[in-house]
Amino acid sequence: MSGSPLAPAPDHVPPDLVIDYAFSDQPGVDRCPFSANARIHDLPNVFYSRRARAKPGWVIAAADYIREAYGSPEIFSSRNATGFLRLLGKDFDLIPVEIDPPAHRLYRSAIAGRFTPAVLNAMEDSLRARAREMLSSLADQDTFEFETAYGRPYPVQIFLDLMGLPKERLQEFVAWEEQLLHGDSLEVVADGARKITSYLEAVIPERKANLGDDLLSDIIRAKVGERPVTDDEIFAMSFLLFFGGLDTVAATMTFIFKHLAENPEDQALLRAEPELIPGAIEEFLRAYSVVSSPRVVAEDIEFHGVTMKKGDRVLLAAALAGRDPEAFDNAAKVDLRRKNVRHLAFASGNHICLGAPLARRELRITLEEWMRASPFEIAPGDRAVTRAQGVFDVQRLPLAWTKGRSR
Image 1 (cartoon, rainbow, N blue to C red):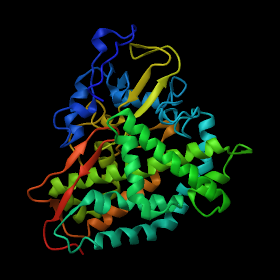
Image 2 (cartoon, helix red, strand yellow):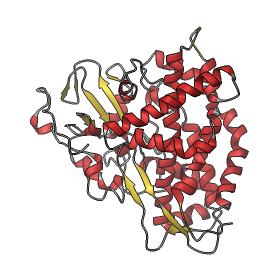
Image 3 (cartoon, one colour):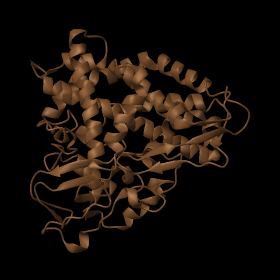
């Protein structure tokens, strides 16, 4: 997409605020997209890029400004912000992520029951058993690729169980999600969207005829206020959960393990003081927030001295907000003893991620179990490979046991 011709910026955009910045093109992005993009905080807090996520628009990089935008849905609207369903010729929005308040709350409450503390507590033993089983399978391997051996299959299997979808198709589902969220052309993204659509359009009627105890059945049974959800609403909610459940936790987990493999002192700290793990997860989420959120300006406004017009696209660069030096002391340093970390990894305001409690639990259980195993490092003679195409992620994470074997 980077080679596409650039359209002129709109007339209301001052020339000095046109900075054609793209996350994926910064030197060193294949080693750490967060460090590679650190210079974004040397630019204006709000600027206009004709290459922002392949769509021209404003980029907001300051953490406080992003939080303000999340909290102002009447100005920074979510309606048709991703555009995924429009690629398929559908004239409705992803639910609930592309729905603004107050309707957003009605849709959100319809599917929130699977993420309550009581439900997650009941899942704890099975989540831990799965983590131990997958970790044990690596015990006799000198080296292994973490992303494919654990980092992706662990959270994705949990999600597929939650939705009542077949785990044996995991690799196929992940390939579609890869196209949708990391595709390097509009054609690739659209093809991924079509594949997911074809699958859901086949499985939803089957599930309607055989409702079960799963999240997809919950969606089909849901009511918005007093009325049942429509077929379009069922599809929109299912589509969102499908790609959301396959990517973001896996991406976050692989960055955490890349960090620990490259920083043995932090591994040693968590092994010696496992009570630090919950707080360390918040620090990891700050330093390695993987998602940025698109918005559309709903009315002409002046935002911190910048004129924005109705219909302008805006990218809330939450993937980089955690490295904002104005928001965090020594923002580039990952400090596992940092207190009261207020990050944007799960967004903020009305659109804070519904699955965040499950994500935190998966991360906590994973770290608890892996910190009981042998130390690990980047496999000698190899290196991790990262990218910032769509959701930031680690494409390859070759690990080796540092001493002895995993228990």
